[in-house]
Length: 150
Image (cartoon, rainbow, N blue to C red; front, side):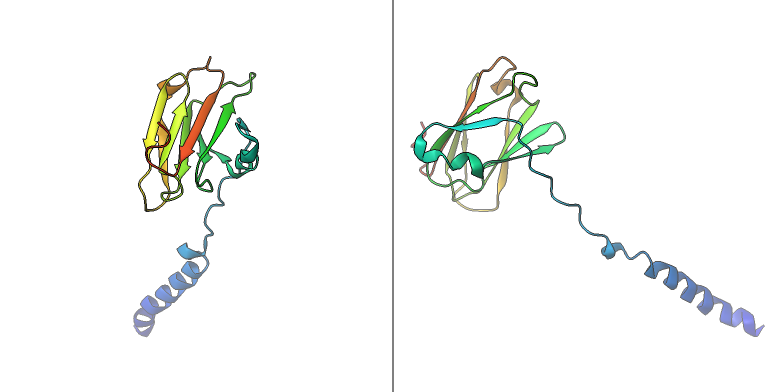
């Protein structure tokens, strides 16, 4: 009978020993996505030469995310897709409020995004009909003032 009283604590100790091998917080977070080079980014002015290097590209499933969080002030770049692959199915832009106030995207149609003056980085999704596979280039223009990119 004594061993029946000792069995539950022994089972509990064995279970806790098994749990020690697999603590849920021991797993490391997934690594961030690796930057890719899918689109060619050309600055429109000579002084914007280093701007293209600050725009990182990442895949999120079938969406190409262009990270514009390092951009400040005003500037313009032209995106072009390789002829062999064409444009990605979807495009998104990550922006940092306070760095820019307005982002204008000119593809087959013109889309203007207003960026709030403060807050965390946000992702602006470009509608799939804003560019078509035959679009030669997409122009991005950003500005720090809310009315200067009109």
